[in-house]
Image: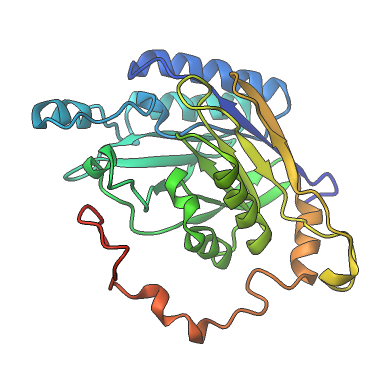
Length: 302
């Protein structure tokens, strides 16, 4: 990256217009424009914005109607935001219910500032204990280079429940992620925010999460820096640093999180976490498909 290495991520904390796709499109554009005026390089939507994370009904006929709201990459909703990204010269992490063979997916597409989709990720850890059992889970985590005014940044994504599994952020780190974008749609309490902070610390990555504002959820969109210790030859030589960059309240708004990518890269080169001292030969059990009590759940999909 250039000497100007700051990357600004706009957390778009909004309430949706129900499942009205046209209204959500208009509101999303308004917030994207506001984000660009504030100097954002990336605008991050909350989870499944196209239908406002409306819940899938339990009855089969109503469920089919809900699934029919799914859209594809060539549909007008996505195309609108690719044009907007190109016009604003700002990347957009757009979320939607994605049309897919069988059941739809809960997805995010990362559109670069040139209007090109560089990555589409579908939520791996679908909430199978809830209405998300009506969705097809994703099968892989992705990292893609995102071109910014200051150079390329390696960006990964995880969605809501994904962040509650340490493996999600760990795999993204192993694939080279320097920044992880996280659309969200649930209450963010101190425990979930603490988990998210830990994902940044243990993987030495920047993390940014956009949630729905109250009363739809409780807001508290949040971002954490990767740099947890001041400069030193090793972690024990540096003073601990506060990694919180921004935490919103409950109200709607655009909340800007600035990441110093040059500083993050220098930190990753010298510190002990991430992939520096892992012992993967001892981790076989992590990929086992077996599950034992008390964790057996009939609704779980491996």
